[in-house]
Length: 428
Ligand SMILES: *Cc1c(COP(=O)(O)O)cnc(C)c1O
Image 1 (cartoon, protein in one colour):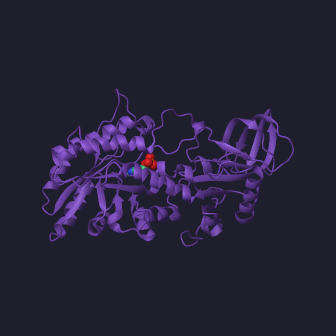
Image 2: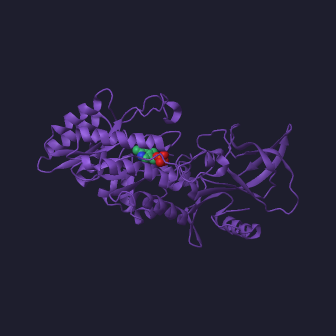
Image 3: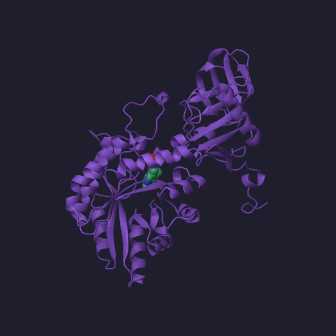
């Protein structure tokens, strides 16, 4: 056993005591959130960039994991909120965010959403011509005030003719396309509005590789476009998210860039280009995964071990939905916490969940010591997209326990029937 809860060399007996304590308090399956690790990640990433570009804003991508206590911690550390829907915007307000420190992105904003963001002075990046129309209407009705918007841009980021976009898509669906003239058209439409400036460009692309090369390309392109179109009004360039976080060795990905590598690549271009702008622009990044992925673990208990045909099936009181919403067949890193003293046999086995779906596998064809009833299995790196994409399906979602200093506290309690099917919402 090593590196559990970030503490090296904690021996098995100690850890077992801790798991038993958590179990008694919180039940047999739960997520464990490490608040300290979150702030370490935040401060590391923040200083990597701010030490190289002083006008720097870090906006955390809410959709990646919107556990309120996590959002509050990021807000306390000075992070902005990056939201992509009205409900996320309202959540940011509920967390106590200053609306000026909210970045409102996403492909679907209503005219009311846009009016609110403009009125409150949030940073807003438009995604489509419908949104340009909403801006026209609002600024027309409020001629006595001055407003600012940014535009999400869409351009070819392929490398050696290959698209690096997630899912292998050739063309990104977001923003205003540079190559077909739509960006220029949108800029011209908006420049006709007297009480409005276009002050920023936004270039978030989700790529499979998360490579430095892609970020260099995005940064350079945003600089070049700003020089051509908005050099006098430019206030920020927003590079978006899509960075790697701490990647466990078991994932066997080579050349994972560090926060410093990303910052060096992006900031060197920003610093080289700043002479072309009237005022030095802010650099904005919107990390999600890279800040939170390693701050969550999932614990579940072994309930049964059986053999069907020649295969071992280890049944746990968790599900693939708790660890892998994509239901991919790729195994993640798993740790066995033994509660039995008997000797353990090494063989090939599957770990399967509580749902009634054949495909509910947490691990497929894994080779290791076969767990025994009562043992715990721990799955690492569950912080990004796992919690938010976990459906309430068949069984309530597991509670979330936060490790705050040396204390453990339920920050999402165990759900009951009324949380599963909320009687304020559903008609009985
Ligand atoms: C999802 C998203 C992010 C965060 O992406 P990660 O890959 O989790 O870092 C940032 N910005 C926008 C606009 C997004 O949609």
